[in-house]
Image 1 (cartoon, rainbow, N blue to C red):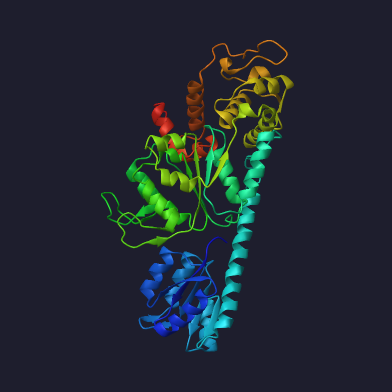
Image 2 (image 1 turned 180 degrees about the horizontal axis):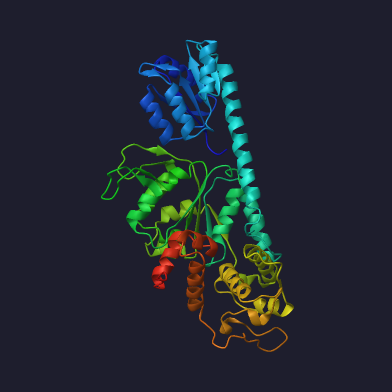
Length: 458
């Protein structure tokens, strides 16, 4: 697991805390020590540790209720009870209340180290099993490396070479090329797979909303802050934070993000204390960030920080040989969603798709196939069922031009608007479900609804 292991040490005797902390720090642990129940509760909730060493009896009372609160908040965090008043009854009661181990003082530090490592490793194994189960459940999700073209094979080799790194990643690619799919795949197959994957689309969000979403806020920090809200940085702790369209990140937010990445510390809006966080950042953009830096629309120091590893997703027009196989995989998935049997593409349909330039890339390919599938009842899709921009279809290799069958071709924006409107209607204008079906972030769908002036039926 990435980063030093964090242990919360709760004991009201400074000499005990000093001895345990000094010993564990020499073995690579990061120790946070507190001396009372309230400080322990706050530290546990603010900076979720890998394990807790908890004195059973503090000056402000016994910690049985605190133990239950910790387990209610996150039962996977091992809690080891330390006490100078050891008894079989107390040990049994502590275990029943959720303690993972019960150790009597003076504790043998070598034994403590062995037990602590074993409990943390056991927690890792449990969470790894959960993550693998989730990955199995997602086995039908899009594979970003479908195809046999040289560019997609080179991309896969590059991704595999940096998969286990904690370095920040910048994914460049055109709209609809699958940047979010690649980011999710890297998380699911990397060392942080057992931890959260959190994504945020930075496009079109105000500075205030971005700041609150990323860093969170305290109750009363500003007008409308009626309750404390954790930020996405906190939610992604130990996992992956994916910032899509990072080129649109407000300039005033960029220094705070840079500090959080470099120092692994940040503050909620309206808060005075630092919170520690360990995330791997994956950012994506379809913009020219170096040009934005030159125009002083993006900070150079942040650009160099997120650009440690740069991956470039090729557009579909640069890997035309992959289009038939990718289209069939998408078609199979759509047919399952609609409860249809297998639907195949004719050779003419495949040839037409290979000639098309796909300005909307994989997202447009999916939309074209979904529309064709909804309008066709048979087990095959022919060239006449595919409807896209006629002017974008290049001349057939070794043959004449091949126009689409639409009587009145739509431009790409009209196609997008109609498709979004239809999906919203199908999902009863439930924006979150519609966004998932469209492969969009919820904030992006709201922006498109506003742009196209879409309204629910009365």
